[in-house]
Length: 126
Image (tube, rainbow, N blue to C red; front, side, top):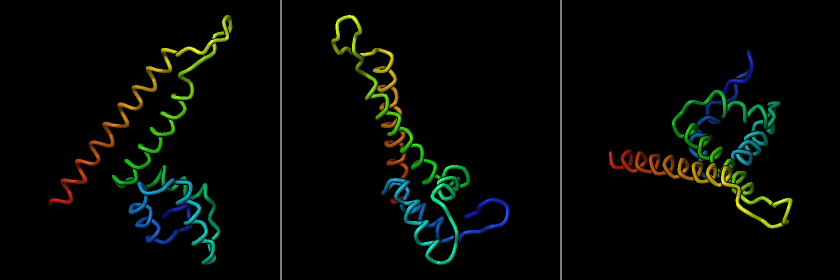
């Protein structure tokens, strides 16, 4: 893993990330990596690892895993914004823009997951 201009973090970390990106939250993975690396004398922050995953790793597994994580976060936020309170009546009502955003996000998420699953199944057969 490359950090900045001069420091290299062991390649085994990249393998660990690729193998586990879809199995746990990225923040938890970053915390584990930091604990292991700092335990062996390195000085790495969670932000260093997060930046590496988001900006430097281009492996399909990592890109798809990051995309799915982002879409999940977006779907949660848009779902929370679907209902608004009418100022005049005080009643809850759906916000059509936010509902549309939520449904588009869920649709995109489902397509990404389905596409990734079919690729994984093909790769397992080959």
